Image: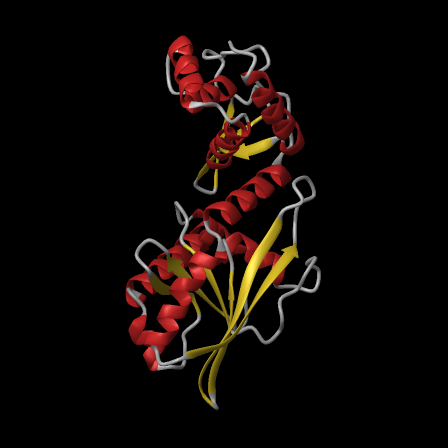
Length: 271
């Protein structure tokens, strides 16, 4: 193996030691970034791939996450694979009791894959169709979690106004998993009490939403779910008073039926 990969594995090893648990998406991103820091020429990369027998990013990923495909003794070992909340995570095989690290890893990856700026565009288009104007928007950077990962949540607050008696304060987040940290007095940073709606993106599976529904009560506040790819919004919790909002949801009846099914299943499980 060329010496050029030694600093790559060193950086990735330091990252693995720091966080203990890393999602597949984040690990692939860090591998790509580490290779870019080496500024390999196209020829150097081609020679490496020819000598090692495959795509360089994939070879490094497999070297870290499997026992059989090591390409260096300096490769960090994260062959322990865990499915959590619909995402795949890899962790150090010697590490135990990692519920906090799993949660941090999920939040870190959510902030990377679903930046609130993308979700915000869906929300703004939706509110314009419903007859609202976005009067103000404010970006917040909140350190709300991270006993192990020092995870920071970037969120965007919007004030949407239609008339003197129709206005909504909307908080856009990267995941439903961020919401509990913003709800109560015991959280590191509580959301403003006058927030009317929180908007979060879809997830790979319903698991994060089911967990949230089981464990939290948002009171009068509404939660909407944005499908960034389809550029649509649907309700998760709460019913808006404005019919123009209701009529612009993509599949409100289907979304509410899904929530109803979850509630029935939860009652059976609790019983």
